[in-house]
Picture 1 (spheres, rainbow, N blue to C red):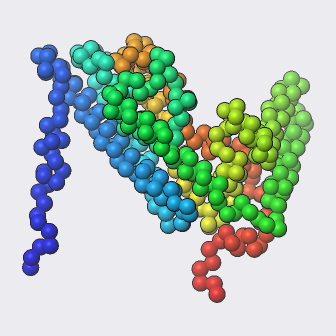
Picture 2: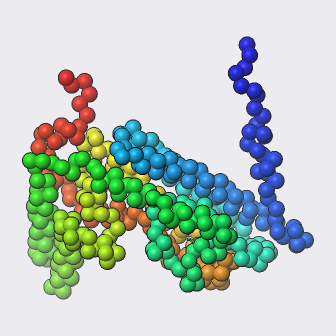
Length: 364
Ligand code: HEM
């Protein structure tokens, strides 16, 4: 029987000749062989391969969400792909341990030859950040220069385009704003939820005021904190308060999208909301794992070069420490937990709404 396709040879298929001949230690070029430079190159190349895979997954997720209406099947696919990204991220965090088998003294054998190259110039890393939705204005300046100034003209153009393109953050926001279950017709969900929140906060206040283990000062402090929480809740109900917080930079997600995301989290036990909940959770996971990677990389840089400036010319460890805090994208999704109330206090949905949110297979 004739085979339908010509045979494939492993090495050709994977272009191993190209891949395995792409390691050129600079220290050899200058006749000052440094054993660990091979590890340094391979670890960075492995990162770039995984970055390529992450971009492949994130672009496909963005494509699903570019459609006017995102069907349930696509959310399932998006969740699976985002979860693949998180598995890769865990590997990327672990991979730093391999690089740390190189000691700071080993690194010094070839570090100076690398100037001014740096992971700072990783274009794919920037494309990932921009595709997720990191805003240019949010970035920590690099010696008062924008993050792309150290790149070639061609790479700067790529980055500029990615800044202008629609990000995953934008797409998720639009998708949340379109969610139909915000309209409850005859049932005023937000009034019922507000009553439940007021009851919960009044109860918290009572607990603080009657707590025998707290001094008057401690009670006053805790009541002040509680009032801040109440103010935070008010923005959930009042669009103009929310938009004011957006203007001041305390919130990014629109009011309608925030309400939808909150509903998904509150009623995630309803079958139809399972997948949207998993999707939002996967975005939080991705943000958390990038933050973890950044922090882990910062620690490695500290032990590797102390407080010296980086090969790329930044303040090194200090610059990186700040990006860890400042370069998160889905902070608003993390903050949703502020507005969760116990299941037992959740307003009970009317039967017809609950039915619409459930799957009733086999029902006539
Ligand atoms: C010996 C190991 C390493 C050292 C000492 C190191 C050091 C640094 C330093 C000092 C910076 C700040 C920019 C600069 O001034 O150069 C930086 C940025 C960066 N490095 Fe590394 N790095 C190492 C390994 C890696 C690896 C394995 C990767 C994986 C791709 C990586 C990716 C990055 C990225 C993406 C940035 C930009 C971070 C940002 O701007 O948010 N680095 N690195």
